[in-house]
Image 1: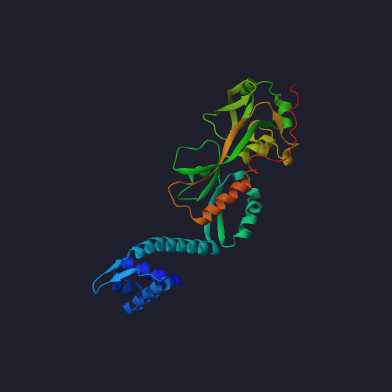
Image 2: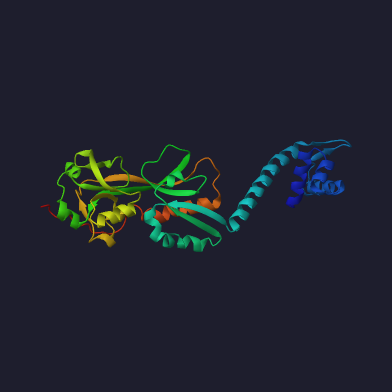
Length: 308
């Protein structure tokens, strides 16, 4: 069966007569009429009752019209999907990532860029990624509790945070034996008010809080890790930094029975249609970052030395 004839018949019925259908198709009315006549001959049934002014569907014509219209619409949708899939996705995708991922971002995204050579990534490294989604970036990766907003979040997992310090600091200041001892130590914090911050940790007795004095404050775990290695105090760090093999001899765990789980999310704007290129990057990030940012690596954490 010639699908063009079926499509012509549907257009005639929808237009109401041969003339309007011919005008829409930019064809002479005689061509439209012949096409429908050939379809009827092919089917062996009369589909349309014709008069000089109007057409009307026969019972067979109505049944054929309803199913043919659905089938043609489905075929058009399938064609559109196939063409969309065949076309190479292109364009710019703006991504905000935690500062700590900057040294490895090239290797993380290299496989994606090889697979999609016409997508260009513009990366911003910040610890306030969630605040940028919308006007400034398309996707963000953020650690911690999310603010109430219109953002759509997809959870990568939890980033386990524990306490770490350098052996030199602990030799000098002593090793905390219980959580309340932290109040006597110098803390390295990502945020503080008036030099003080409150750490929430989960230990043998459940969730506990301790107020610590932040001797130095910096917005970013990379800075906090470096400050801890430099011996400036005790830091609350994600294990993918504090337990990384590269710092095994530079940091040791403090009060290792205490930790806190912070959620890690990939964020996109919730009130907008997500372009295919953005969805591709988002899905790739979910698979590529889930292990890297949640500390799934082999590491040996040394116990803190005994205090004096």
